[in-house]
Length: 529
Image (tube, rainbow, N blue to C red; front, side, top):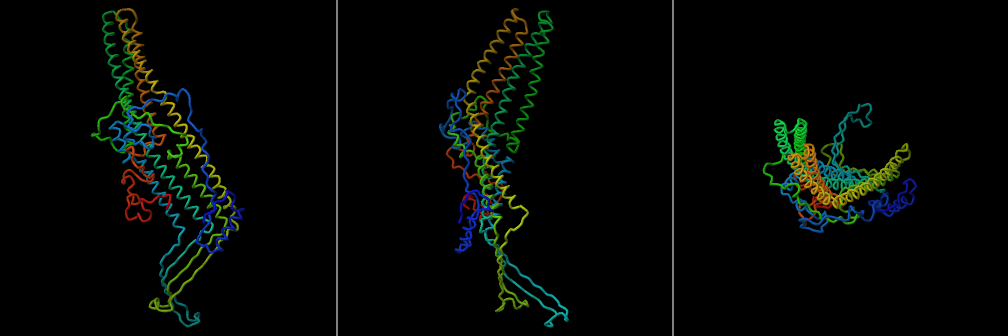
């Protein structure tokens, strides 16, 4: 039976010891108590609502949202991303990404470690057979027999009676670690969906920047040609030619840098996908036509406790630390074990299975720690400190999640207006360039005004592309921060955190239900082993 206790030092917990001994005296030798502290979820160190103010007041209207009003966890990533090319790339990444493969294998390793620890609760039974022949000098043999032998066949049984819950606490800690790894694996998957989308969007932004630079280079090249012709005819000056050449050279240098960035962003995307991008991918959309969902409700900050797998993983790690305190406390109390043998014993091989050859033995043992040099006390102190560390980590995970969502909401409420203003600035700079060029050709202004207008238009176009990328990336990140990206289609039944989208991602029998499934059936809930 499990008895929840307050987190007091096991050395002074006399009442708990009395309860355990009473249980033993009542004949419940197979039952055990536990010295784990009663687990209580720490309070969430966040406000009951997200921040308010000008940055949060004007959230964008829904655009192309087939599931308006659904929380992020219920929106499939194929519904969130409208770009067919991006959907195909995300699917490839979920199948081939090595970080996701490692995360899934870590889950399998934690599952196996849990089974190893849980097995210690049960008796160990083994078969044994032995044969001994020995010769004794005649003058030392009381019976006069100099050559004798012993033959035995039987079973060996050993069992530690977990009276004070040491093994059970270790089992609970291993289970919590397994569940933490499963939630971490879920966090890795939804982060991968976000990373692939952001890297793809960065490539689209690179393409737009290259287009802007190419157009600027064409304009600068034409301007340089006309200025050079005018200088040859004595109309323009050498200074005008040098200024025009400077703009052309700057655009050429930027073009090379942007091509390098485009190639490196594609390499980063290939790394995430885990294979070269196939040539038969469906056509994609431009950056300003991605049409990502913008109406995902944020809900309440307390919803993050249920939606964020990183928070769930931090809590399971905290539960493991809480269980380790129970194991550390149990080390102060006696350890009871039973060892037994049952079989046949005979001085001759032919007499092993004759009547009267049965032999057995049973050896109960109680080990009581008397002096350990302070190691048990230090282990208990370490377990208690580790729990306080995990409490801090759990609260930090909540605080980080709150900050990420709040930042995402602030950005979602401001990027549309920023992009609108930057687009108006781009149009104004384009008109300014037309007027400056007209005035220069009519002798009203010098060539410097034209060059300045060209530079300002180029900067305005680049700023607009950057803002569009940041807006799209923020929507993707906010989708992740709210727990989205775990299901493929809206309305799908969510998978368990310890399952993969493709059995090949782990390649182990435990996931595919092969001959090892009897150890832990794949459809069995790990929370109720």
